Image (cartoon, rainbow, N blue to C red; front, side, top):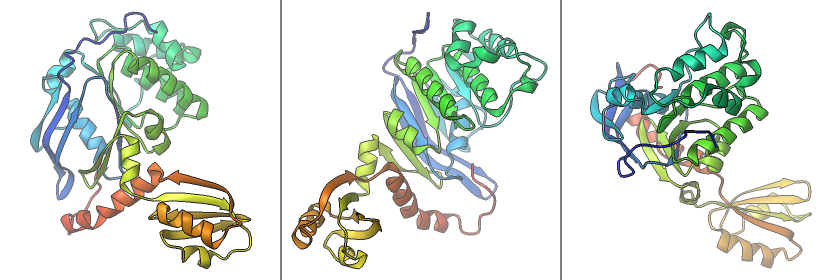
Length: 320
């Protein structure tokens, strides 16, 4: 645990986005978004490219002004929250300042906060201590990402807003990042992170908010999100049976064969499993698994696709 790592916000006041909307010309990036995050929650913001994740985070930071709606950070507007040092941020864009060394960057950011963490502690926690004396212009992509993370957490802020925080990191870097994040969340920090790594959201988020076309299409724990799609998978060892015979079983949506193994994607596993055992008693090594977060992601965002296309008819440009 890092010395001095505490949380100071009122436990009853969290992050509130109310009727938030933002357009870029004809492109509606965020549409009447309502979201409440309790203090101490770790929330993953998921969505395909153009879903509005980055725009939402930028409005929470006060970097982008909403067209309509409000943002409240622990009871105050983003500008006041920034002035009070209530959040730390890690964005996709930007790079560490030129003509400074890594330690100097983190020390500079720490100076903006009233009760920062120890610079050496943060460098060690993020793995940036190994190149703390390096000029920022000489950093690799993964090293620069570690420096961004160090700058985001050194202020010991109560809220961390992280946009694609593990992008560009190798396996070791991602492991180090989540180890550091656990140190943050164990101290009651509130965390919102946007990511394309669904397995990270599944493993580390208390709650997942899924965006598509600037609106929320699902919100809840990963288990609840996965349950919404209602699909399960049955795996079994079953040689000599055709895929078409398996697809014909009740409750089976799709069947695949991989050598002697078969994989059945089911809309109703309770019907499919007894039907499989009745029709093919030689089936063995049977496993039944719930739908994955990837399945839920694809199905829920696809379900919103027609609505999004109808709403954006005639729009051009890129939604962030």
